[in-house]
Image (cartoon, rainbow, N blue to C red):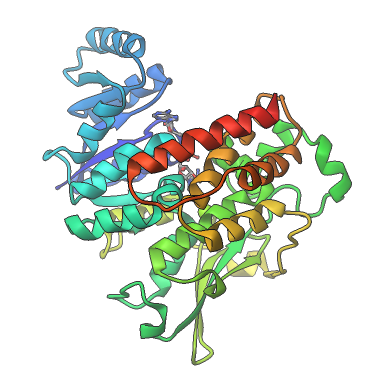
Length: 389
Ligand code: NAD
Ligand code: MG
C-alpha cells in the first residue's frame, strides 16, 4: 500500500490524481490533502478519501474546515500554513508526494519531500525551474525518486532507456524534442494579441488546466519553463533541447538518438496518463484514459516555433543560458505579470515586456542557497510590480 500526500489537491492535477487513486483502492491510501482557499471542495475530497491530515492556507480557512469536518463526523486533522505543507510532504506516514501546487508557493513543500527521500511526483515545474541545481542535489543526497508528471517530461522519461543517468551522451541521446500545441493564439494575427482577454487566453484548444498554466501556454512561457525543467531532469544543455509545435497534442514529446531513431510517446491529452504512469512506476495501471485512435486523428502536423509571436520562449532560453538565479527571476516576473493580466491590469503582450524589463534590470547571481534564491525571487516580484503600476 502506497501512502500519498497530494499538495494542491483541489487543482486540475490534484483532481486528476484523486481520480486515478480512486480506481486503485488496493494500491493507494491518501495520507494528506492540501488546498489554498477552496475549503468546501477540500472537505468533500476528505469525506471521500479520509486522509490523516488536511492543510489549508490560513487560520480562518482551517477553522471553517474543522467546522465542516465536525458536521461530517470526520477525524482528519486540520493544519494550515507553509510549515504544515512541509510536514505532510516529509512525514514518515507518507511514501509518495504529488507536488501539484501552482507556482513558487510549491517550492518549500516540494523541496521538503525531496530532502525527506520521498517518491516525488513533480507537476509543480516552477519549483524546479527556480531551484534547479539545489533541487537536484537534494534529490541525489536523500536518494529520493523524482518522476515527472508534466506530460512532455513524462513522455521523454518513457522514451529514455532504463537507468538513464542524466548524461545524454552516455546513452546516444542526440536531442530531446519537446512538443507544444502552440496554444489558443497559434494562428491569430500577431498585432491583435495586445487585445486578447483572459477568457480567450485560458481557453486552451486541447488541455483543461489551471488558469496560470493556461496563460503560460498562450504565451508559450509554459514551454520555456519546460525547456528549463527538461535541462534539470535530463541533464541536457539548451542546444540539445528543441521545441516543436505539434497542434494536435497527440505526441507528448520525443527523444532523438544518434543512430537516427526518434522515439515518441503518444496518447490522448489527459493528465491521468502521466499521473498513473508515475504513481505505479515501474508497473502500469489503468488511468481511465482510452488509447488514442490514430485513424480518427488521421494526420499529425509539426512546425518550428516563431520567437516573434512567442517572445517568452526566447526569454526562457536566454534565462537557461544565463544560469544561476536567472530562471528564478524569469519565473517570478512571469508569475506577477500573468496574475496582473488575469486581473485585467495589463494587456497580454505586456506579459513578455514586463519579464524582459525585469530580466534586463535585475542582475542575476549564483544559485548558492535557498535563502539567496528567495531573496532574488522577492526582488524580481517587486521589480515586476514597479513596471505594472
Ligand atoms: P490549479 O490552479 O488548477 O491548482 C493549483 C493548486 O495549488 C490548488 O489546489 C490550489 O489550492 C493550490 N495553491 C494555489 N496557490 C497556493 C498557495 N499559495 N499555497 C498553497 N497552495 C496553493 O493548477 P494546475 O493546473 O493543477 O497546476 C498545478 C501545477 O502543475 C502547476 O505548477 C502547473 O504548471 C503544473 N502542471 C499542470 C498541468 C495541467 O494539466 N493542469 C500539466 C502540467 C503541469
Ligand atoms: Mg506540459
